[in-house]
Figure (cartoon, rainbow, N blue to C red):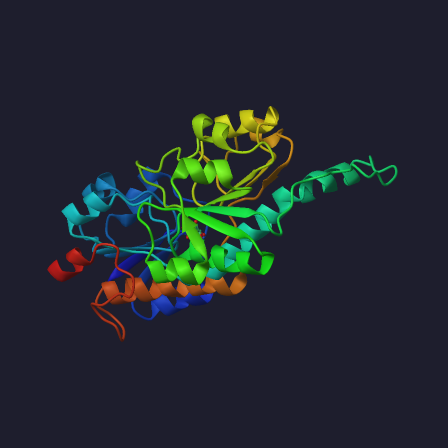
Length: 327
Ligand code: 8YV
């Protein structure tokens, strides 16, 4: 029987499914430090991970490894060149999380724009004396301009939601989406700088890479309207958190909604004390049904990539299909 490591706590019934095919070593505890992860992978044929760093050091320590399934759509924790060099199949879990993640991006954007958590903290602190005409004034969401940076599947799901709010939708992406998709979404392509100048609410949904590191830094924040909000549901590192904290403290932008952070689970201390910021612990995909779908899809990918089950040899979501061809 092939051996696999399930590197994180996941739904026990998904682990049971995997046990039908594999001898499973399950880390049902905190994330493994790198050396421990390498040690546990030394005799494994496959692994199911969620954000664990997998690179050439791991492959050097785990010569039998043939497939690693990430329970996430983002796979910046994988060094794909190293996967290709080692001939290891990498898979992810796209699509199943689009709607839940877009819902959450919407919730963060709305909460930041309408100062929901800021006013709640104030209420809880016993500061609510009387109604005031100027209490927690904010910019509008309905009828405003939504700027989406990253018009992939989740960005498109966000754009569809904007219709119900009569918003103008502008977007920036590495490449323009097809004209019929632009037309369906009613979305207008802009350069990043023009988007930042025009949008009332900017939402980030770009994958993390060396190229997208600090897509939003001090220079970009300086282009935004002082009444604008910034929401990050993409990855920590897409935003320069220190520069964002400065902009919020100096009220150069109105508010931010952040689900992801540079160096998470640590959060920049000046973000924790910034006014008008909504902070959540990387939960945009965390609905019961979506996380179940992600776990099952990661399992389907691993089972198939290791040549088992009804789709043996044909995992649904290979990131490096060229390796699959070689196996
Ligand atoms: C995951 C995510 O829950 O899919 C992604 O890329 O950011 C989240 O949905 C997280 O990455 C853990 O794997």
